[in-house]
Length: 297
Image (tube, rainbow, N blue to C red):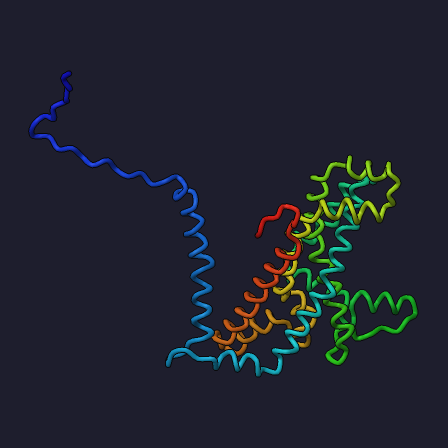
């Protein structure tokens, strides 16, 4: 038996086969570059700015941040605002979304009106509420028209009313974001489940607790993470209403960077917000994960 071989012509060279770039690299590459340039590089720069001076590594900027008399009030106010505001926002958003689910008259107009604050900037929302709460604002004018005594709602020595003003303004401004996410989540839940529970005699609260909210958990998880992270960044509304009288952590970052011309301490404050936001997100992901799937996230 003879084997026939193909003869390679003399004088020609066999070129090595070119290696192709895997398609996964083309798909992931832009995202990696995007994240590196817009997230990784600024974070590294921020860390270096917060922990480095001309002599090398230092904790002076962190110590200066902690010893600033406005730092701990800012931390307290930010945490207090989040603890009070987030549950109220979710209660309002879920209530409004359930109301819209019943398809009342003009429900599309209701949704449009409730979503209007999404179109406003934070500063514009703060100025709107400043026109209401200042000493000669609409609220005191309405009280005077009713024959009641007005109040200095934004006075420096009236921390409680100042906190309430910021809370109301933030509730009005940011609840619509949670509402949009909850409405989208509710639209993905078939009404058959609710109707089946209703056939078996479940009350409204039982259906809400055992049917609607568990099925709505993925949407609530996204809304909770987004809203909490954004709540840590609350700044413009409080700045427009109270100036420096109601310090918040992001407001302190702005003050150190622009007013005090110290970007190193401002970077340390920004890192505090970043770390707290990341830890909060991890906590939410672990606390609200679907244990029935048995997978780790």
